[in-house]
Amino acid sequence: MSLETWLVVGLIVLLLMLSFLFSGTETSMTGASRARIHSLSASGDRRAGLVERLIERKDRLVGALLIGNNLVNILASALATSVLLKTFGDSGVIYATIVMTVALVIFSEILPKSWALARPEQFAINVAGFARLVVFLFGHLSSIANWIVRALLALFGVNLARDEMLLTGHEELRGTIAVLHREGGVVKQDRDRVGALLDLHELELADVMVHRTNMRSVNADNPPEVVVREVLQSPHTRMPLWKGSTENIVGVLHAKDLLRALNEVGNDFTQIDVMKIASKPWFVPETTSLQDQLTAFLRRKAHFALVVDEYGEVEGLVTLEDIIEEIVGDIADEHDLDMQGVRQEADGSIVVDGTVPIRDLNRALDWTLPDEEATTIAGLVIHETQSIPEERQAFTFHGKRFVVMKRDKNRIARIRIRPVA
Image 1 (cartoon, helix red, strand yellow):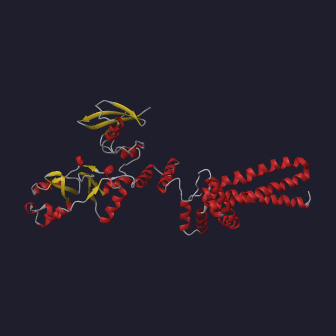
Image 2 (spheres, one colour):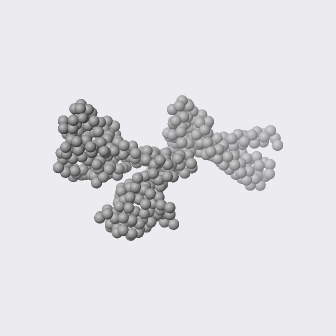
Image 3 (cartoon, one colour):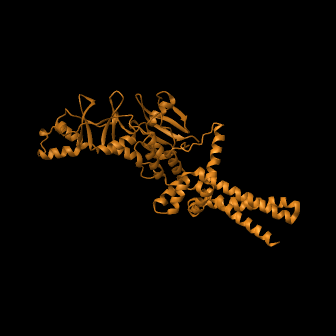
């Protein structure tokens, strides 16, 4: 072959190398994790900062890379065709098609994209300078091409506005955590905690509060020694005080305040006035989200609030600990059931008290029972059956078999659950 032919072959090889860069850069820039790139940029990596700025206008970047890639691919194919036509005559077109297809597929598509997909952030950082040069050269052409594409798609009702996102930030985080857990990069407890944290704005106080039927409270009209005994026998630090009716909450008594007051009067119960020691009750609507309530607890430096319905009637109470436990959970081990009201039987079934929250059971057993319409397991059975079932009645829904083991008046007290085979 002549020197001119060798020069053309060398130019084709150079164009294939450029095509390698274009394809790899496009794949790495679109596949790189924005969170990881931002973390690297924040730690002082200037190339990561450049990548972060480039992918802010991903449509412009990808358009410029595609323009450059197509230019070098078409030019390489044209040069190969001209060389092989001179060498083999008319049949050179066939040879050029075969040779360039193999070369472009292997060296300009599969190889660079496989490499970029395996290490997207590292690849993107290494080609950041090349990407900036491409955007400088073809950025304006890319903007024009993108405008034409948007106009054409708009004719078919497709809007590619950059401010329209398919997933919210919360959904994207949740999906990322789920994928990492499935791949083994995140353990179940961490997945549950992050998921619970993301759920705080969706859950209401009614979902986590201690219901009024389970509240421990003290009659403020009782003799002081009775009040002191009840407070000291309680496992709780704060106790609601009521007068006349358990729903007429008039104060909240803190055990430390009571002990401090007793110490000041030499432990003389008769000199104690619990209403003077008690703090004013804080009432919050049951529709308040956990995120808002957590913020309110922190702002007021409080730990305890009483939950009321739309009519102002007391529905229960919520504490700062309730919200924190909703995030961190109270499961000691991801395989052992260490939850109050839940017992695993030898036959593989689960015996559950009706008051056990659905979310807690889902988190303990990695189930997906719905909790939109009901808070407790008993509530879920009642919602699904549209009745209050009798004892020994069985139902199948959501992939589980529910058997009512015990009913106390109109309340489902205990349920046996087993997965449907």
